[in-house]
Length: 284
Image (cartoon, rainbow, N blue to C red; front, side, top):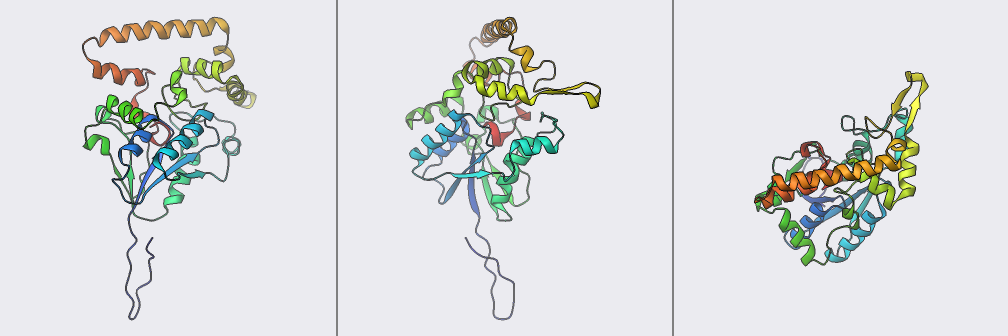
């Protein structure tokens, strides 16, 4: 890395070299991009912003990816943990409007790591979701590029890249559609059920973060606007969520008969969330 020196008598200024960085989330798209760019970008840096609240499967996948890349991934972590910021925000859980978890536990460590260096940031948005904007850093020294869009890499191509690299998909994709913290507010109800069934300890931990604040007139702070995790965990409610999900899968699959590309996009976006809103540094 070049140094910046003050201009003086008989001195020359050495311009900072541009850094090339790919932020990994532990999800399929950023991982496939790492494989895709292997050997193409000299000195490409790989970073993973660890919130300390990730699934164990995410950590396992990042380690697996490191072996494929034959290069260490730099693990970044906030000096303060989730509980610190939760207390700072008076117990108000993060949501799609505030996203303080992403800002404090992902973006801040990432931007501190970058500093004022000129950086090209590689983002794994695919060609079949090129309308997606998401939530990424807007620092002026960071230029964001989208290699998959430029090269027309789509959903099936991502799966092929991962399979050919011997990675496959992270284990959590068996019951979850995105990477991110185990309590991510972007989760669909059936994914909360998946958390309960696969990681009951983490579901209970998530449930304990919810509360009713008597000082706010009984205001409830819950991960879902309309339902607490205690309510969601009832056996009758679980059965209802699963039944609704299966019906929706059939209905949407029939709607896309003859259009495999739309079906593939829907499979991962079926949570009903607009993909422009998701946090790219968490969910790619």
